[in-house]
Image 1 (cartoon, rainbow, N blue to C red):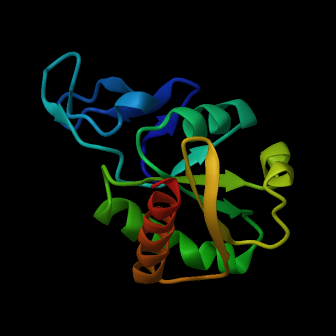
Image 2 (image 1 turned 60 degrees about the vertical axis):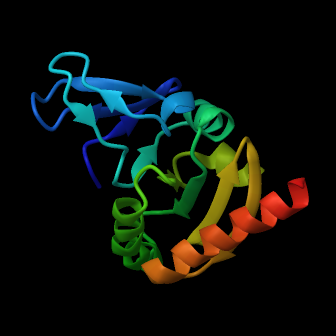
Length: 160
């Protein structure tokens, strides 16, 4: 996983030019941003980001301008480790379109319970505070991207 991290107000990324930490507010993740120090453009997060607590998850799920692809996983789970490089590919290829996050079900148990996670890995698409759809099991990056696009299209049709 990359060097990006998250708190209850946004994603914190290091500037590629000067190294300064910059907070990208959840509501502004879809907008162009520049480093507060050197004014170099800051790219959207392009690696999966570990979420460490329920409050941070809830803030991201409710306030993110980007849909979240949530990986419910645990470090002891072999299939979870197999899907990790696929999620890294998805995050890199879809930076600025989706925010890929990881929720360790052994650590953030309240979120796992709330989402009724019964098997891992489980991938869920969450947008505007709502779970849109989920799939379980190991999937290649192309299938994860297709799942997310299909889920968003379905949600858009229902909203219309």
